[in-house]
Amino acid sequence: MISNLEKEIPHIAFNSNRNVDFGIEVISIESLVTKSKELKHDPEKPHQVAFNMIILFTEGKSKHLVDFVWHEVKENTLIHLSKGQINAFKFNIKLKVFLILFTNEYLKNQFNTLPEATITRLLTSHLFSPKIEVLESSNVNVYIQLLNDEFYAGSDEINKRHIINFLFNIIFSKLEALKRDQTTYTIKTEKLQVFLKFETLLEENYMKSRNADFYAEKLNITYKHLNVISREITNNTVKQFIDEFIVLEAKRKLINSSIRSNELAFSMGFSEPTNFIKYFKKMTGLTPNSFKNKHK
Image (cartoon, rainbow, N blue to C red; front, top):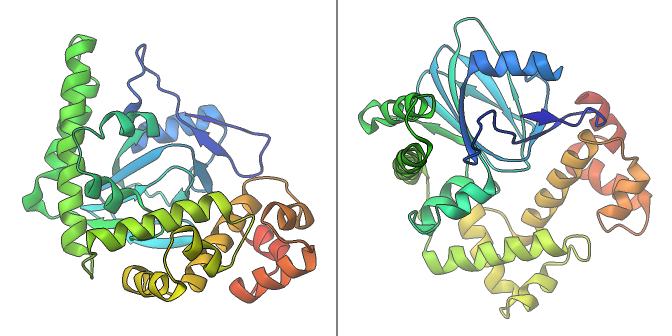
């Protein structure tokens, strides 16, 4: 892992220590602490990841920050993060953790062997909680231990790559099954697909428009239909989802760079900085600068 020290809060990129970069790495909490000292970055302070991550807590109790929300974690709790999310650890001497880091490119290579619904449920950060309670009967811990052992075993690189891929797919599929059982609502596939298209459009166009009608028109459906889908999937109206999405993007940019509120306002699609400041304060109770200072 490497960090850009020019930013106020580090942006952590994927950088394997192996001679052959598989696009995936397994490390322990001890290794994380050692690497952090080398990089002069404190994992207990918020940082943004440029890769996906699965964190399995095997011993101890603590908290883990994901996009400005602290989640209680304990033995057999798993946290999964998607590229771009903000996170932070809270260490203690009794804490034991496995971390699986993997790039988007690695995940794309697994698409042919993993069902689309599996990937959606685990890595669509705006729709689902990042926290999973891992049942002992699922044997997820066993497979993650096997993945860790295989990753550091001395077998040849070709066979190692195949074994790692198979173990990853098993872990990912088992986690999706747990996630499905722990999700409080069932999403019909066709509605989910429409919503994911809306989310993609929002990611691409939020600087142009915060108007729900704009996205409904792009999807060739009525605002009312999109609103029904949004309520069913997120329990929020389209407008509420758009607002939450924009505020989260603004928060990530605020704490991860030296950008000023005026610059941020224009980058978020606001024609006047004062309008953005009012909008942000209405949604969060804080001005952009107050939020930034709070999370430094």
